Length: 353
Length: 286
Image 1: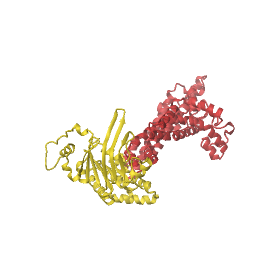
Image 2 (image 1 turned 120 degrees about the vertical axis):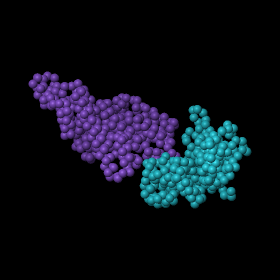
Image 3 (image 1 turned 30 degrees about the vertical axis):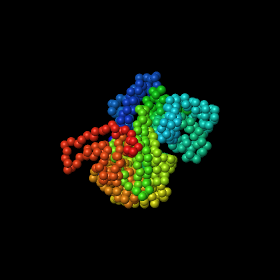
Image 4 (image 1 turned 180 degrees about the horizontal axis):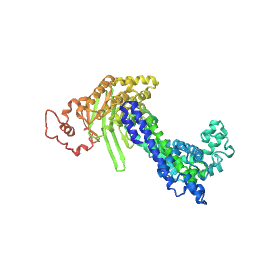
């Protein structure tokens, strides 16, 4: 998205409305092109998978007549281009095909799995930033001291300890021994289905329904996997924060701010931190994107019915539609994150407006 | 010199410790300063900027400093805690830096950077600080101060940036101003305006100024007194209007290396450096 950003800065002198319109239009076009590329990619993933789409529907024991009928029904006799256009048309109408393993439309499955993953990775990103950013800043402003070393050890541990092991140990300690958190799953079994799904995110739905018992249960189930996942991303966030901050602390404007008599904390938060927000945003957006598709292990350990689990099962059983659609959805998500963070850049950095 | 001295500095030493050994940036600098304009001239690395920074105790963290005396009025700058130094900086001693492109925070509005100084030391409300900041912008001769107040540093020119810098540093009415190459990053045409503005403010506010520069001609015209620094030491101290009578060979060499319009020369002489200039000065040489 860098060229667009530069365009925005370049067009600043021109008439604001037309320049703004041009930039906005440019962004829409670029997003559409990326989307088209993404669709082409998932389409060819579907064609390259070593699975016969007909056999996936019918099962291996099939007569020649049935095989041919399904072959025609799936439109496989058409040219590749026609098939591709048909695929795009289907996607635009929300038709992602049917999953051969669950027997449900993929769209319906994803609508259930995606909010679970979104809830988990959002919570993890919040934990990761809430711990990682202050840790990185503390390390930077106390460079070389014991605080810096401890921050480094905390970060390194989060990065090196296998996430499934940490999940299991967490369950063992905080659930089995201390009873602080819930076991696997998203909510205690007897609360399952008690709140009407609005967003699909259990805590949010419970809050909307005003059912605080379910809310507490959902929180107890979310906190451990989110913390384990968040701790993993803490390492990256804190190291990046530290290096961004170190770079800023030697800048002239920091010395100028100190020369005005500002206190240490005012210099750090009101001056240096304000200058790393844009860079941090990139890091957190990337981490968040990575969390979304990187939750497979933690979803398995915690029996979390999310996208990671869904995709793994789809791959195991050669479920073409599931694989194609999940990849497409993750791609669309990255695109969304990109657009949102691009918009946030503009809000945070006056030079890009 | 009946007036009490603003600043007294004796035997300032600044050194940097690195893996490759110790580098002495400032080696025993002493001077005192009243409400006058004192220039420090020297080449890059002569220790002039570090002297200025040391006075505000704003040296890089890798530096260590020692001095026999470093007093600002009644305040002992050596014994002051970091907390007390925060009261001194901005309020009593302020510093104008070289390039507003780097010394103004790019993501904070001009107005906020000025009010910040004022509110830090005067503890006023936002409204009063805002009015005052606009007054300050007016005092540094910025047209349409109410508009500039809301602008970001990248939206204004270099000359305006330096005016903002001056407004920001003088907002809490300090009595000593350290100007570290305040015009070196500016266009020649703007340079004169900024110097003139600075001079007016110095006169009207009755400030003491430490003017750090590498420009001998500028310092000669601008200051009352000049210190010539070489390799971390003051090799010569002289009244600005008597600079032509300077005796130290380094100063003479500098003066001789300057081109003059009415005496065309084929080639400017290259300064021949005598290793003896680096030797520590004896007590009476200081």
